[in-house]
Length: 221
Image: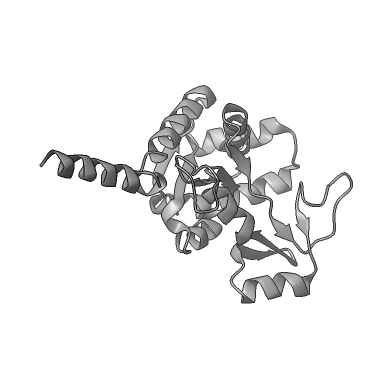
């Protein structure tokens, strides 16, 4: 099956895979595992108005843009989701994401519930798969944050205070997993992704197949 431009038609459309969780629930680790599992899954490269940090590469870590350019894209509907965080704008450019969907590639978003709602409510929302990761307990969540050794006590406390606001939105997601064991949760994520890729709307060749079946049936009549 080929497109009108003569290119092979993808057997499926790509998914917008949204992973959300409070800090310390394993989201980043699982996102990396999913990318290692399937090369058709890639991170969305966000646009931001902040300055690059040492070692960051434009177009790879972020698309670094001016405030004027960012606001222009938002005003013209070219940002799938966006937010203002600590004095800078962040957002997901719509164009590359639409291209990935059309090519049958999945785009992975590591975002909070507000960004998830914007994507789900967008015109690409029908292709989203949203998953929320819950910790086994709040005590375990704190233990994981302390065990990472990345933050001081004040930062950890601030993350803990924010965690309940994030957790309180778990009910708006398609799937919710309790991440007690990373290996088991990763396998659950793989199962969910495999199944969602088979949704009718993700399979663009089904209509043509159904038509061929109808033609065969008519020929037998």
